[in-house]
Amino acid sequence: MRASAIAGGLLAIAAALLPPLSRIAESLFTAHMAQHLLLIAIAAPLLVAGGLSFSIRPVWAWILFVGIFLLWHWPAAFQWAARRPVTQLMELFSILAAAWLFWSAALRDATLSHGGGALLVMTAAVATDFPGVVMLFAPTPFAQMPHENAAAFGLSPLNDQQIAGLLMWVPANLVFFGIATLLFARWMAAPPLSSTPLVSS
Image 1: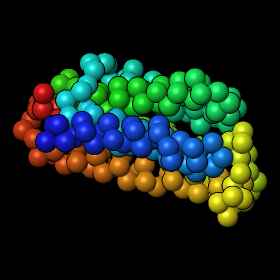
Image 2: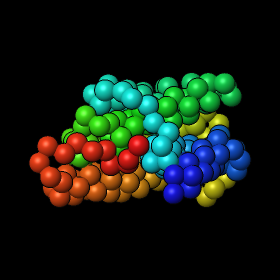
Image 3: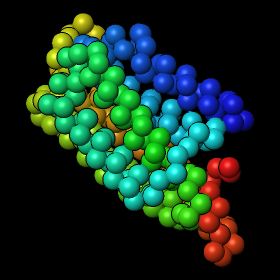
């Protein structure tokens, strides 16, 4: 089970960083957001579920994750990163590292009850919803890749931005709120004062 989780996490990282997705992401913003989604909502939690985790105070994990997430969803920041392969990798690996620390705290921190973990995940989901909601409902495009070519995929720049926003908002929330619900259910079912992690060591 743990080996399968780690293998799944590594496959998600490969899918995010390698062609064809990495090549498409150069000209389609939706594909770039798909890279983020693979790293944050699939790769990082699977690696933690497989036993690859790091001990960090939950509050710092939350701050780092939300802060780095919001930074790299600011158009000027991701457009700057997209101009060079080195900065592209810096962006994606920093997002992966922040998500890994966050899920390490949420799923494996023995000092955090399941209820606390659920709260950590739910508040992070709400905090990181903002860029996706803005992208989805903005009347004009403002988030585009430097070499944007949405027309090659039958889309306008606004369509591309809207799909990217929807991708960030809905699928990511399905993962976050699904895990938060599981944590909350375990907290409700656990004996008093229980603080066992969701994923055992």
